[in-house]
Length: 219
Figure 1: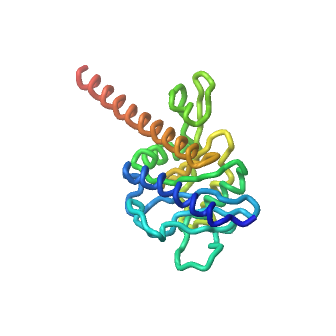
Figure 2 (figure 1 turned 90 degrees about the vertical axis):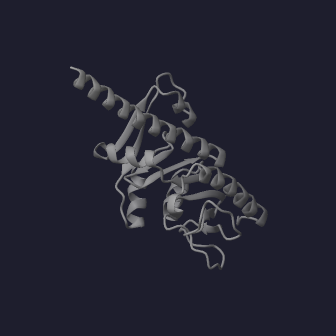
Figure 3 (figure 1 turned 45 degrees about the horizontal axis):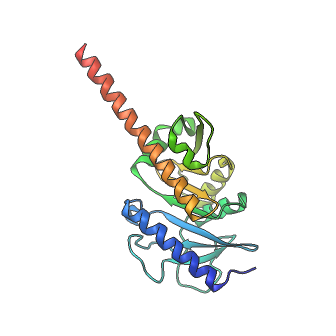
């Protein structure tokens, strides 16, 4: 069933809330990043950020509705984000996914580059892993990392191959993270948890290196 006007406006309002929250954290440098919320399953339709917009501001032309092939469902001059195909991959692969968010931060870029050789980043025993809905004691998570292919269909295929329902996120090398959840609240929580874990680990590496350097100099 096609999404109603009420569903569309509600999705736009919720995207406004998420967008401005992330904008205050400087997670959209240079108009980067994209956000989406699913509004219908059959046929698949979701609201997504329009391409090239300043995500630190609100306007009547910030979002549009697209179908399973990432094509606008209505006549519009707006263009969906170039990476809308990746959102579509998430919604097609995980029926329970209701929102998908993509941001570029220094921390997720650092982690994606540091661990690209392993094609994944793992971390264990951190309390914020619970923010991903994983409550086992001393839990360990592994988030996949894919190459930053310039061709978006190629990038979408690479992401589809590695994402799993256990860990709701994927890193793109020197590009950013995609995180998703059952709704916008959950996807936001997942993204915030990932970002905390990335920053913690990168800062821990810095401190460890500084400590080792100091010890070596003292000796």
